[in-house]
Image 1 (tube, rainbow, N blue to C red):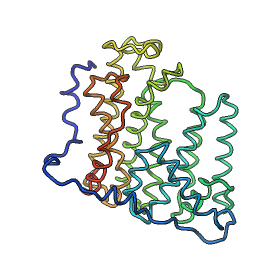
Image 2: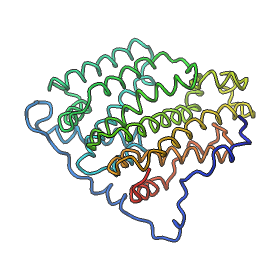
Image 3: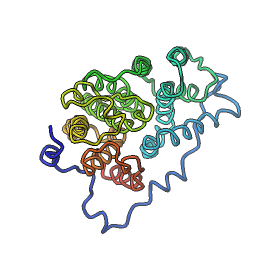
Image 4: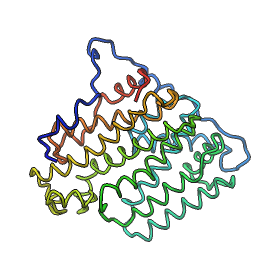
Length: 333
């Protein structure tokens, strides 16, 4: 599929908000950042969650998220106050797992860390979390919302399989990885919000897959700097592109066509997720605020004609907090 056909295939992206420049921008998100409620400290049934260190565990998760998953951090700020600390813990757990692959030099060490988190989840459901900040906060979230253990274990299992450092064989394999990690994270977020709805689950599945695909695309320059390429091999072969083309930062049309095809799949998942819009409970919409940052990236990559190495793709959108606030205010995703 040629990148030159981008406009007709994608149609208009909906990130732009008519009349935005004519209105006074809301200030609520920035106010919320300053007025985060104090952490809820559970009872003393587990020693790890009691005493003066309890506040620090909450703050640790918040700071980890702010530094390592800024977009997830912003989205979490707009969740209902009673759910916010639990989602911070959940996303911090995801960050801890995501960091393993890049922080170890040997697969064996990565497997040991994954084993630690498997045992940690088992201990959490036995009311015996280890003295680790994220584990303590995750235990609190599990106790408050009765979170499904299966989704937590799926995230660990899939991250563990991904330690192999191999490119995805096809787009389906990438989507399966995204389903078991990003979508599982959204299923748990819906549980925290008290949502049990089939349409919300379907939307979460597609949004999670879009998130996984976009994350893979965004990380391509970083991975290339480490002599690694994880983009689906079937799409690369379809356009006659080798891994070496990405390592050399080749900007030929066939390389951009690979990126176009992969980005189009993410766009398609967003479109499918929005097709459930009228059937999804409004209470579930805050869980899907990440669609704003996903669409922002897809819009930017379209503007640079699918040049994955364009410097503008690595820059933060300073208006993202405002876009997120407006999306939250409009009660849509």
